[in-house]
Amino acid sequence: MVSVHALSSWRVPSLSCVLECWLVRANFACSVFASVTNAAGTLLMLPVIAFWLPAADAMLNVSILGRAQERGYIAIRTHQIRAYTTNKQMQVDDYPYGGGRGAVMQADPLFRCWEHVVNTYGPGRTIFMSPCGRTFTQSVARELKAQYDHLILVCGHYEGVDQRFLDECVDEEISTGDFVLTGGEIPAMALADCLCRMVPGVLPEESCYTDESHWNGLLEYPQYSRPEEWHGRRVPEVLLSGHHGNVADWRTKESYKRTMARRPDMWARFDLTQVHSRHDKKVLAQALEEYAREQGGAPETE
Image 1 (cartoon, rainbow, N blue to C red):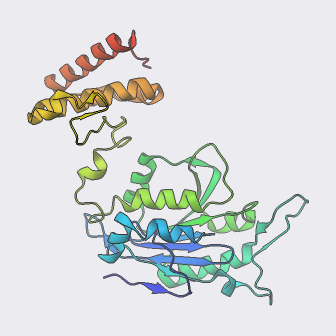
Image 2: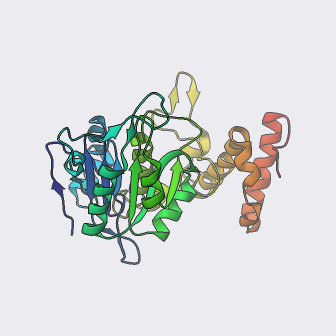
Image 3: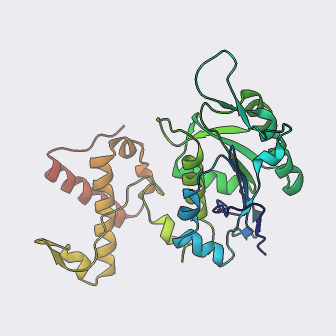
């Protein structure tokens, strides 16, 4: 059962990767709501409170996530954050105490909106998108999806959000990397997209997201499509052979070698004990030999 309510003139894209999503921005608070169940039949919710941009509509309402909304896997609700202010100007930010440039999102309008979300749809784990938080990775996404059935994402803007709101309402802070953006909307969209694609039904099958970079601590193997030859570059013969076993071994080796070459930090952390069978160990040994021959040395390991 999916419920969609647009309570404003904007249709804000769903961040509801699992069930419910809330977006709140300085001029706009959007709550996104969708109902989906996980493999255990548990209802999952992902509300997001964030400042938002109109461009987000175009990004999250088309292609895979757009079709997922149409088919009822995810849905959207929006709220005007200015409706939660108490002044005539419907102001939601102000100058920072102590001086400095920029404006800070005031605690009270955010709290009123957050409180409305919690009182209406139940409490959830509240996450503030911040460069000061722990780094978001695929493993963090899997953790959030597995451990919580209701997430509330809060996005700052300009100089950020009043710390008192964070202290009172936020459970943790998450960063998408060691850089700073003008707002938390893009990080929230990235987090939401990452979670959305793991919702059953959004992608055709589970392998669509498990057979990807970072899922098992490795980078994905190279991909090729038609034609067989392009600008003098041919598709590897093994991919044209029709031998599924050889194709699988080639992809595994290329995944190993790509990770060794491009992300030695990931390779150093890769748990080699998960390579169990004699055949898998042989494939790994071949990858190490090929890498040493191609790169002129063995990869770094811890």
